Image 1 (cartoon, helix red, strand yellow):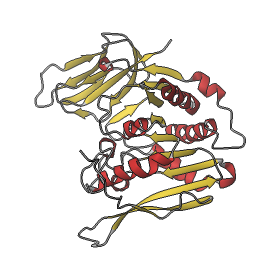
Image 2: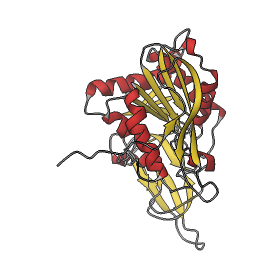
Image 3: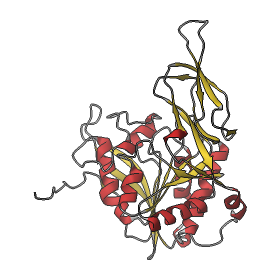
Image 4: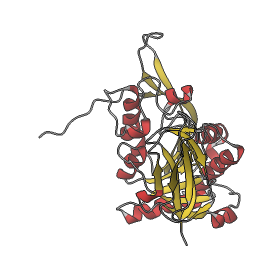
Length: 340
């Protein structure tokens, strides 16, 4: 069977990835719609290049209701100068720009979840076209890929940087070294409940050093978590040899980072009932196997006993459901085990 030849991407960059200096521009994706027959989605991008060296691809707002990455990367795009760079930094503060503009996890155009749309399609939906461009055009340029997440409107996390257990142990070691360099309060060996279609998977399959984060949540960015994102991005760029000059010492932060693991699906607790959630443990608090994590109270009438959800292993509460009402199937808690 002959190999499938994909059509060229419809996305056109207004920047030159091979030109030295600082460039601010767009990834322009044609999008014909009711209010603009020949309209486009204009995704902001910055390229900072100075001679030869490794390339970092930095992204935020893969989900549009996650703000720490967008704030940190819009700030970096405005402050990073070429004389501080050895190599190239590609900055896309809001990957899923339509979702970012709407403040929603998924795109208001096609309801696409960008982080479940890879490798994408050049002839697909708007979201699939964005995924395809990153897969075929941007990821091949990069040595280091960092995608900054938080919990959005429905989850809240202890702030951590993370990488995944990988078949290629050399690649895995590079990823976890970058996680350590990020120097978040927590560092996670992360297990995904559904890795199919993820940007993470696309980057890792291309052999990239990949770092992700979860930095808080609740559909907003706190001063603390934004500061963690700003500092962590620069730490990793220093670690990669791309950002030059003096680096503020984060040795204490790196030393203090607590390493967590997600060894199995027992880390996750999912609601089997709908109703009003009562948190019984706060983020970061220690839990033992069997400890009560949350109750879900029925809300259709009074006098009904709540359902109880307990920890399946020892660790700390690393994530929780954010709004007060939950539906059956929602993830309500994640327990991370503490590495000794």
